Length: 222
Image 1: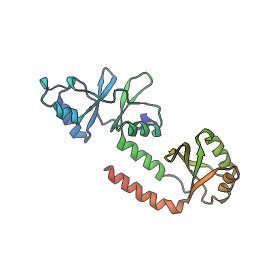
Image 2: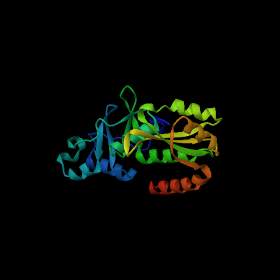
Image 3: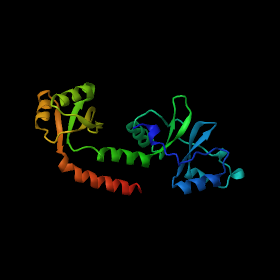
Image 4: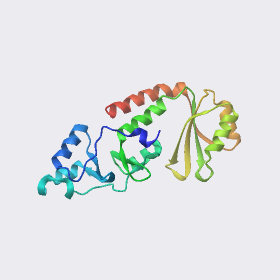
């Protein structure tokens, strides 16, 4: 799933020629505290509710004198869901602008919508087994991992890679495959000196995953 597929067409952009009151009304209507500012098809930054409130009694009541944030924070339309999440969370931004490769503004992705899409992508997978590998960053090869999995007549359903918080030279690779019996598969990885730090069968995790998805979506006011 790409950033363009995640764009929320309902959320408007604003101009610095808009009045402060109009922007505040839009934020209230769409239950957001940030909105993208666009001029002539170009994204120029994010305007926040706190800045609006601080300058409510400004000259002529227009947004043109207000400071903007995140002028250089955006994603391109062809970037993956995971990249969208990384940029949004690293910059603590509620609405992430999406541009095409020519720099034209296309719309915004909300962090709320992105989290929902990620939650659904994991919850809707087919039954299977899950295991976690700890690998050296320099040696990580998804192609090699996939080859070992397919050599055991299995397929990768999903894969999630993250830094090990205890050692930034290591990666934690969480993989879901389309088989419940992981015995022979994990034996293969052990034979190739992979460190296995976790393994789960789908019937052990599916109920918990569904419950967690429900909690997440409730938190996000779905």
